[in-house]
Image (cartoon, rainbow, N blue to C red; front, side):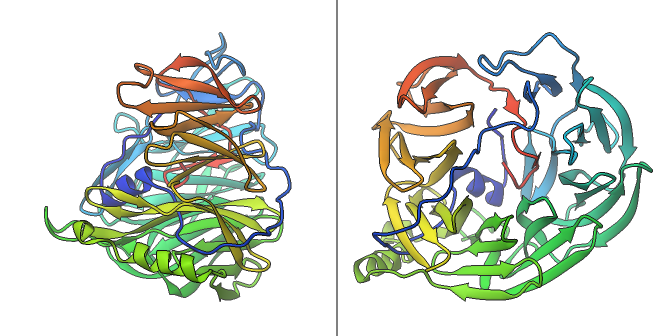
Length: 439
């Protein structure tokens, strides 16, 4: 299911993912195998038509079992407009026995619905008045944290929820607006920016007890300014966030700099991945768009931790009329060398031991974790990856040559298209949690 987002920041984040010319190296470590398309439970759960249900692993067709009403994702004020999400935030319990889903629909009272995964039935509804919930993280058996929107401000606050007693036990103000987040087994990591402007970024870390720690990232610019009219610039800067949960490190990625944060003591170090002279020149040109792109508003990034010390980075420079792809890079966080493996990519999806790059009219290109190209499909087409699951990628193609109202099914092991399926696609709950800043 594709999300419909309105507003400058959400539109930019939906169009592109992260990074810029960080460098090149001919020798990078090969990350350990990653499994990015598994499911916490089987058969997998999905949201279809504002209902939670089980689907068949192969066909993704709804199974004839119970269904739980969950509502829509909710709406919030963003950069002078409004952003709306189709999928409600969710989080699995640490033992996968329960699922919490935020109910933000205008027709329902704001609440957290607790669902028993085994029986697939709602067991409790916890009222959380004050604004829609944008993210959930069930970090301990009886403890959950949530990010709640503060009406009309573009800011959020932290809620600490005692699941066993079914009540909110603490409310804490966050310093700014949430841009990115990632959940580990011990903590929720949140990248923050000043509300409604570009300024100094901060990183917030929330532990299983709900304790909040914040560190300033003085060399990282982040945020978005409201649009000032049809011809005025609306600057944005959306860094990428990747988290090494095993090593308890977070990485905030900008076009030329990576901030590394030790999540145990919040010590911050800054690194400039090594860059050859030729790529440095290309990088400077990328930062200074050509004359016909004078209204470029800024960089947007997404970063993904692959393991083995390596981050995958891609993205674009966002313009009101177009965006310039930054390419797909692999960055070694141990030596701070980087290698561009696809100069035309602006989007990235992860499968089992495979990176899927998209951007422009290059279709979909698959790379191994070592950066070697495996195959390319739909060359000459503007393609995007809707979802990756169980060894298959579901690919949309814009334009008259794409499947009418449907998606192409790609067998990632065989490297070929094996069929089509209609849209909308069930929204599979494959990660431990998901929210407004995770999709």
